[in-house]
Figure 1 (cartoon, rainbow over the protein chains, first blue to last red):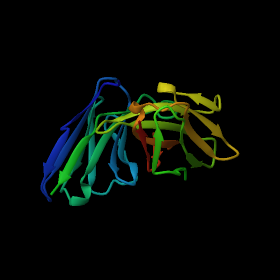
Figure 2 (cartoon, rainbow over the protein chains, first blue to last red; figure 1 turned 90 degrees about the vertical axis):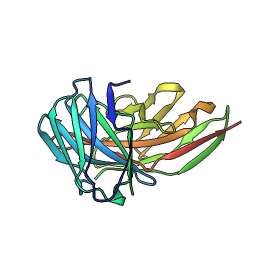
Figure 3 (spheres, rainbow over the protein chains, first blue to last red; figure 1 turned 135 degrees about the vertical axis):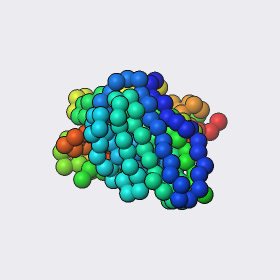
Figure 4 (spheres, chains in turn brown, cyan; figure 1 turned 180 degrees about the horizontal axis):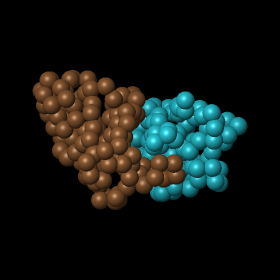
Length: 113
Length: 115
C-alpha cells in the first residue's frame, strides 16, 4: 500500500466551526489531491497540488481551501463548516500527472451537525 | 469534457458465477481508463488500468476489462465471483489538465455476492 495517512479518521463538528484535515505521504510524490465522496456522486475533486505551494481548484472547491508547505503534507481547511460538507474525504497522490495512477488514503469521515 | 457512466448501480451474483460490471465512457480523444474497488469503510484500491496499450487489461484478483472503442465501453469482468469481491466498484477516466491529471469517477456499482 502507498504510504498515505489521513488525520483525523473521524470528526464530528458543529456548523460554523473551522476544520482542518491532514494528508501525509511518505512516497515523495509530487501530486496530491483532495476528493469528497457522497452517495450517488462517486468521488469529486476539491483541490489538488502539483508541488510545494502550488495548488489549484477542482470541480467542487467552494467553501474549501488548501495548503502545502512541505512535499509530504497537504491540508484541507473548511473555513466555516456547513452541513452540506458532511462527507467522506479522501486524499490521493500520484508520482507524475499524465502517466501514473493515483493512490488513495483511507479517508476521513466528517459529520457537520 | 470526459465522463463515464456506470450502467448499473447494483449488481447481485451468486458465488462462483461470472461478474459483469458495465461502464461506458465519453472522451474526445483516446482515454486512460481505470477501475477502482472500495470495500466497506475502506479507501480505494486500483484494480486495473488501460492506457492505450493492449485492449484487454488484466488486473488483480482475477478481474479483467476490455477497452472497446467502437462501443465506447470498458466493462469489468471476472469468471467466477468470490464472497470477498463484494464491494463498490468505480469506473474512472483520466484527463490531463495543464498542471495535473484529473480523475472523473462514475457513480459506482455495488456488487453483492450471495451463497
